[in-house]
Amino acid sequence: MNLDHYTYRVTWSPEDGEHVGLCVEFPSLSWLAPSPEEALFGIRQVVSASVRDMQENGENVPRPMADREYSGKFQVRVPPAMHRELSMKAAEEGVSLNRFISSKLAV
Image 1 (spheres, helix red, strand yellow):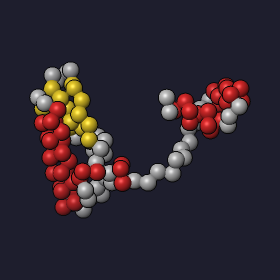
Image 2 (tube, one colour):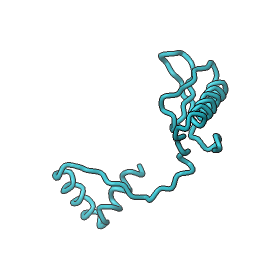
Image 3 (cartoon, rainbow, N blue to C red):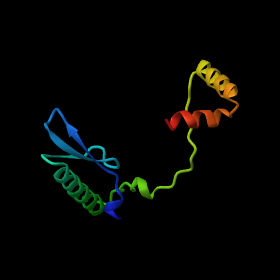
Image 4 (cartoon, rainbow, N blue to C red):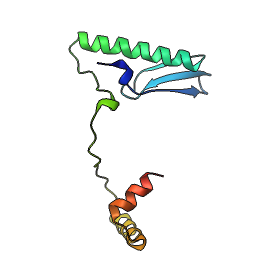
């Protein structure tokens, strides 16, 4: 498992007054540090230790999002009135409902 393939992010935490390192695949983990570089280093160390611990205990380790395959399809349930409204807007623009929704999601 390549730990470099995980999705890391660093953001500022006004509550803590420090930068916080996060990993999308491990939402319960974080690392606070005074600098963004230290926060990234810290979260990478925590993820590494967690993966090692999970492997030693025979637990399933999350696959990095970057290594997953995506079909490009997902379903969204909306109220019937919204479905009708979206269908009418798509028709007014002369495109399929799928293309209309895709364009709105891309914004």
